[in-house]
Amino acid sequence: MEGDLSNRYLLYIDLLGFADMTVRDPRKVARLYSIVDSLNSHRHDLFRTIVFSDTILVYNHKDPQNDEERDYLVWYLIEFAEDLHHRLTGQDIYFRGIVCSGDFEHYSLKNIECFYGGALVNAYLSEKNIDCAGLFIDGHCNTHNKYFRTAKYTDDFNFVYLNRHLEYLDQFVGSTYPSNQHHLDDQAPFAPYQVRYLEDLYRTMRNHSSPRARVKLLTSWDFHALRYPRMTEALVQGNFDISYLTPRTNWSEVQKAMNDSIKHFKRIGAGTPHSVSISSKPRKRRPHV
Image (cartoon, rainbow, N blue to C red; front, side, top):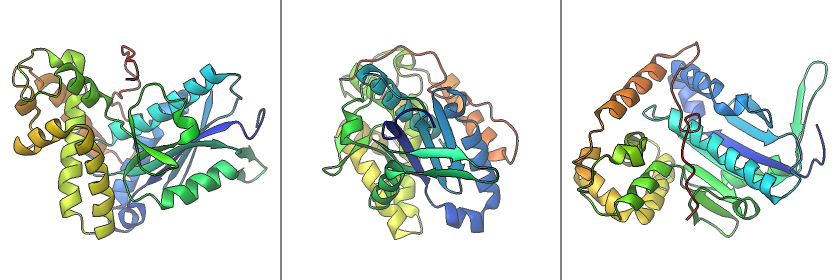
């Protein structure tokens, strides 16, 4: 481990429903691990990724020297969660994650891998008290969050909106649905993926066999309904058909790519996924508003 151990920024992700998935559908677990193995976090030289059972940890192994570098670390940790969120589209798999900071130690001995620290304990204990799916960020890290909208969950944590392309779409059309504007696929190219996420969230929060799981998904839906009331109302009314929101935009190419990606991941038991993620595509940087 390099530098000051207290200067670590940590993304902690708990994959929900993992125990039930392991017992009832082990092929789904293999699919999930293949998706996790494809994440962008494995390819960034400032971060290290640890995966054990139903938990994913991503952290910086070099100290930030100033606030600009702290901004960068928080930005990428959130984008790694966004990357997983995107790849899980249509897979009926959800997660709950936390971005926090503190001390964290990670090193290897001859036969075992060691990782522990205050940041990990804090993330583990805090995550268990959050009855909501999605990503959360602590107050310190949120001061370094420049690109993602958040909403207060508790005094200690904010909910992070990972569906940025819904934000772009909603801003561009002024929350007016149906919109009479053309070529909205240029403004929010991944909007169909994120509408599909909301559709799955909405249907699963009503039909899941576990009452506690329904509560977690319902709370996540409520965050989106509060931020995008006209959009979510229109989606429910239009049976989650994105063309109901934007009748003058042709989404067929993006929807085909999305459906191919979903089918590809559903077939995976082993091998390397090829799906394109939000974080891996060139993109215009949007200001945090």
